[in-house]
Image 1 (cartoon, helix red, strand yellow):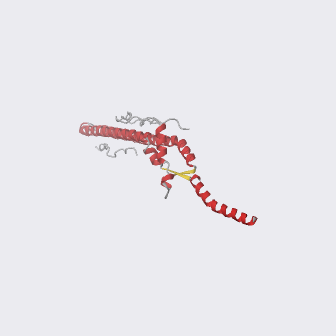
Image 2 (cartoon, one colour):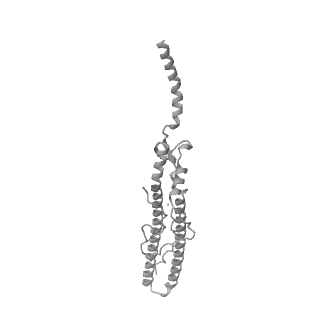
Image 3 (tube, rainbow, N blue to C red):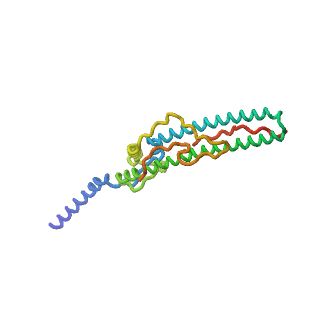
Length: 230
């Protein structure tokens, strides 16, 4: 009698085991969550505002480069027109000064371009840093132990992706940045002088609460110095 009761109990436990495991399966930790880091920057309100400011500053810098190019071409033509009226040695001196001026201005404009790109990269990093506490909370909510970038994933379920929710939470925490309607003019640089540097020198920073880039290429069609031979 005792043997029959023990057998019945063992059978009941064997049948209940799979059902219990199936009911608890959805509550098991997911283990891994997926994030699209690119979208975390480009699809957030603060990221879009940053890109708008960068593009506006880039267009302003391109326009400034064209104005400088036109002014140097006019100066070159005027110097060439004087060649027959001045001594060869004097012309060579003026031509050398003009060439040095062109090179100095070109170096300064290229420095502006590099500064613009660096500032955009720094602002993007600030967005990522601002999102870290949000990502950590989402991982905790999902029971995830690891967060990986979607670019490194071969295949995954959509449920593992927390990008949309991270974007929504980040937008809710960050103030709405104003639209970049007007194109800011790049800071003036003295002829041959060094370009400004440091945060905010070219690209206005996007407002991001405290956390818990390609810039235009300088055209290579600059005026060449007049021939220095008599």
